[in-house]
Amino acid sequence: MRSGKPTRGGSKRAGNVRSGEPTRGGSKRAGNVRALLVGLVLLSGLLGCASVSRVERGGIEVITITHDNTNVHVVKQGQNAFLFDSGYEKNTAKLEADLRSAGIDPAKLKAVVVSHAHADHAGGARYFKTTFNVPVVLGSGDESMFGKGENEPLCPTGLIGSIRHAEDQAGKYVGSTADVFVTGTLELKELTGIDAKAILVPGHTRGSVVVTVGDLLLVGDLFRGSIGGYGAAMHFFMCDVEENKRNINKVMTEIAPRTSQVFVGHFGPVSAESVRSYFDVK
Image 1: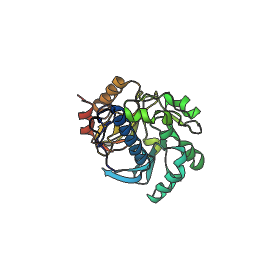
Image 2: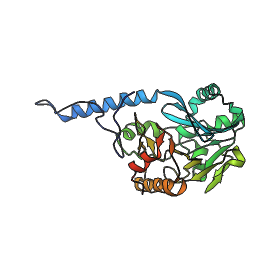
Image 3: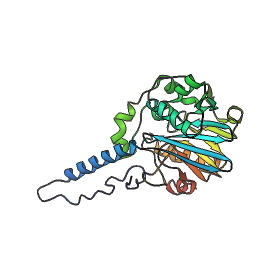
Image 4: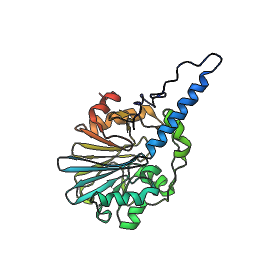
């Protein structure tokens, strides 16, 4: 799939579309409509993609499974493994099958760490909890949203977010309860057997969580990967963009300054350098 790289804070409106000036007696509206239709077609194609990829560094393996343009990451070290996010509720059967194909027994997962309680990231957590007795780890600020299974208000940051807004805002799943809450920094070794930390970083949602493990960082929707590339970009939805930039700066300079690679909720993974460059991290 090929697409234009999004601009800061949104998408590349025209992408690779050539519309030119309107013909005599015409209007720019036709060109805008064409660009919008192309964007919709591009989005529908992206959302249909599914893939499995692996990254290994320092004895830590991250297996990324993608359905409907949302990433679920398996963090694995030796015989121990946990999920970071769980995808849409509707995709749990596909996710289970992909886990098994990747050599991961869902019943042996140590935890599901939910980056935040939006439907595309938290929807499958209840399935692993009820089917395989896997404990769910959640940021404390998202307890209410996770219990209701409904997205709190989403704020588009650009064209793609505006196009997607009604559908994504309506995202729902069967609500549930978490077993462990992140209220600050939670050491995950006792629970998962892996020397990792879950850190509360409110912003995208009140209970958004990032995970550090070695020199790898998993961030959910703190930001996203660029479409069709490996750089970082502003997420499609963010209600306080300036706060988000401050959070990214804090994560990259204080929480995880040794980070070399970042695993995001959509697209990616991205290099730490691309994050620092795009968001002007000092």
